[in-house]
Length: 175
Image 1 (cartoon, rainbow, N blue to C red):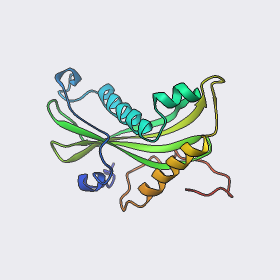
Image 2: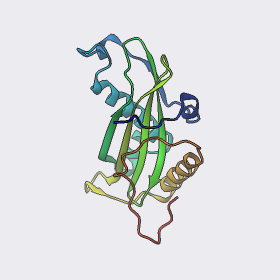
Image 3: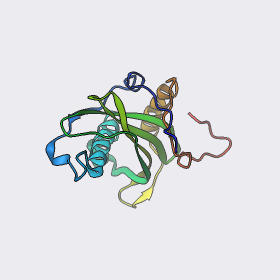
Image 4: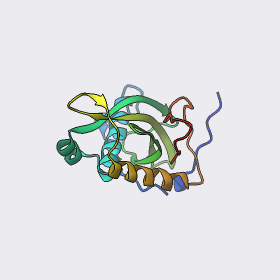
């Protein structure tokens, strides 16, 4: 199996890191590197910061009684991270539908200058009272659309599953 073509760390840095951290000794697994659960924690920390930055954080959840639920995720490992190495998390917005968004979170190993892994995700906007998917309010949709448009202008791509994404009716615009 060939390794997917990856952007450079300099290219990924076009997306400002939403989080930076050094891998602590409590992250180590029996193989002498960071355990998978800690990568999920990094990606989720980055996602929470990213969601708060676009207006979907705790305050939004409390005021609107809406939040986001994970629909699908795919974690891809590309290089290892060892204890004591510094990592950064970057979020790239890929698309938005009426009730869902598609994004990818990237963990970069700052110490080795390599992409460590990616978490591709599809998230649904949910009414927390009914526990059902609900359309994004116009102001939030506009912020997500602006992020998607800005990130679409980047000259690089990340390897994606090809199976996840936003499904749209033929007459709905993509951005």
